[in-house]
Length: 126
Image 1 (cartoon, one colour):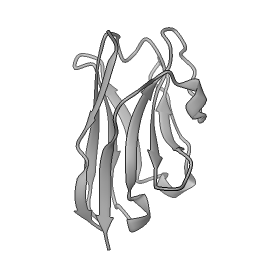
Image 2 (cartoon, helix red, strand yellow):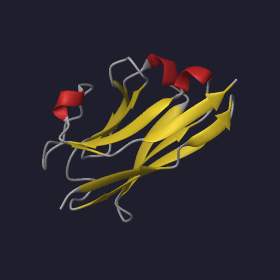
Image 3 (cartoon, rainbow, N blue to C red):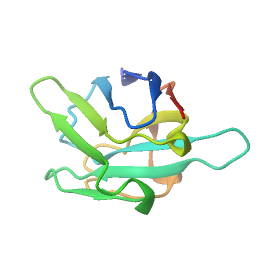
């Protein structure tokens, strides 16, 4: 059974850091592309970054380039999002998503992902 569970969110001051984790079961994190998305109330879900099967990553949002880094630990079967220099506009619910098995190319579209976690809230106070 496929499970995707995010953790690591919380309340942080502007300029601080958080590391989100996405622990998966039922599949290996390197057998499909995975991504982080975020969403605020009333807005569409926005891609943050994705990582391909080969481990290459792409940042979707210019506003987080140089501040957020996606990575994974194959041994722990976990995807991460390291977030530094956080800003109030980074406040959102953050979601981990995975494509179907062997779909190795990343995508910025939420429709490309079949498995989602429940989300973890990140709140940045200014």
